[in-house]
Image: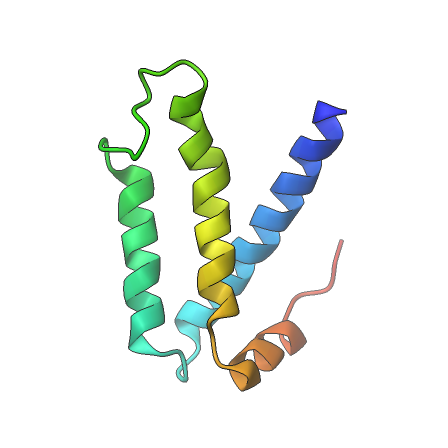
Length: 94
């Protein structure tokens, strides 16, 4: 059961990371999106977390749950035309 969930999370994250990369490189991407993406990357790399890693299980939860949710939220705020173009440019599934 957990293996299926982990596979699903990986597939979603990989797809969202690809959309993030394509959106970052697109000339019509708003500056606020790039700033938000940088903030997410800084949070991921920062030693300061919302929930400290010293807490056995909860310390990892913010990295495994909050970051993908924030990434998905950020991508959903892109203009509709840009979202359609990013989906159209999506590479074929392997």
